[in-house]
Image (cartoon, rainbow, N blue to C red; front, side, top):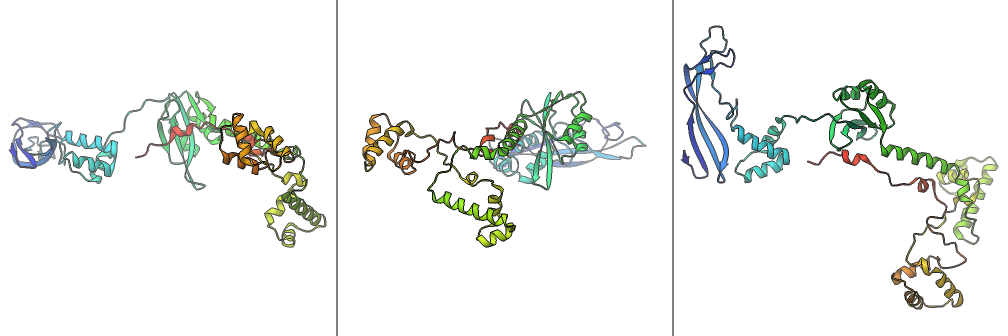
Length: 388
């Protein structure tokens, strides 16, 4: 052993014992020559360790063996064509598994094991895949690699969220071959695809097929949206028209002109040219049987001013020029805890006036999308692969 400053140099040689031939297995100790191998080992005290090892080239005594000479190997210390010991390679592989390429190379340099990112990735690829237990319940779903062009299929453990396999497409044959590698699956959680259903039935005939929560909510919301959309006229008839509004007057006039032209046999494109509006606007008005269906009722969120609305309405009716600061002081004595800006915005919107419709968001005419909206639990979040 010698101290080389930044490195510790260790000189060693192999024992003079018989070694079996790697081809025929005949033990031999006949030396044909010597070779010197320089390898690196685990660093000591922040300094690199260099091992200069002398190995023998042995001659095989068997006459029928085509391998006449061979270089002896040291099991557990070195492998063929390696310049690092087995334990140093293990350390680099573990660092690369946790940090991958560039980050692993930077950390290894700080640990006195200088490697490049390509070397770290090469050791990472040489690691054997871990043996995974066959899950009892799996989830099968597709995802887009390139939307509307290329899709793939992911198989996950529905109980733990662990990714089991990723298939290159979403064809039935590919999924069938992938499921045959997990014969112990009892339950398959999937979407409503008939292709997946047929593949699961052929690959796992004894497994129970169930639908996941996300697709159940999605199907329910779609059906509710279609049902609400079919009764859009009933929802629009709940709020009667309000006379005097500029927007409603414009809507009524435009609806009347479009339907008059359509009644005279004028086409939709010609109506758009004559009235100077967009074609999609003409189509939207033409689909509405009544102009009230185009009115959008105000949808306000509940605020801190709502409990004092009757007091504000009464005070403004008694004294139309009452200052906002006086109203703020009065409702604060009644328990109001909001800001002055909130009160000003509430009054400017007309929500305190008796002659304007002040409808809370829950009671105004809802759209089909609003009625079908619901917080949908998504089990796919657990299927996202971890970032590298």
